[in-house]
Image (cartoon, rainbow, N blue to C red; front, side):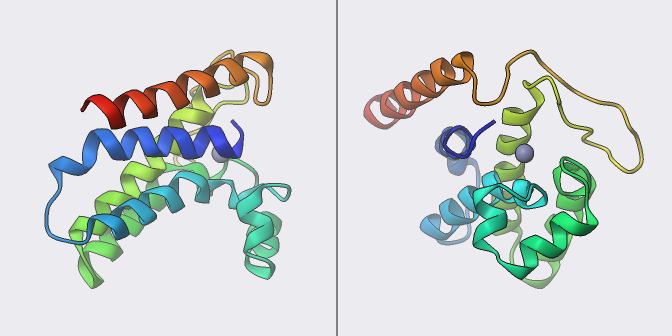
Length: 153
Ligand SMILES: [Zn+2]
């Protein structure tokens, strides 16, 4: 999926989960969720996050295949553990929520994701082509869901 679709799914995940977590700054929780809803695409040389991170993005895209380790749950479980140990369990959940939002956006595409790579090559995939007409329709629906959630919940 494209950058705005990932961001919107991230916003919807945030709006529907933040109330379950306590113990920190909500705005920072939101920023971390948004960051990790786009971060996995750092392994794709043409993505916004890859270009924005300069040499780090070039290095990551050089050593990791697209939708490999950086799209895989084990990396985010490690980050969850490190964040919990060294900083805060509250913000560790923001990492997981952002990642799961990104994962949902990618598993509905034909390329799909191998969520347990490199331990398993089992692939979750769907039928919706990234950047196609259906994604455009999904994008409009996501915008309406965000507006609906902000107004009525
Ligand atoms: Zn992705």
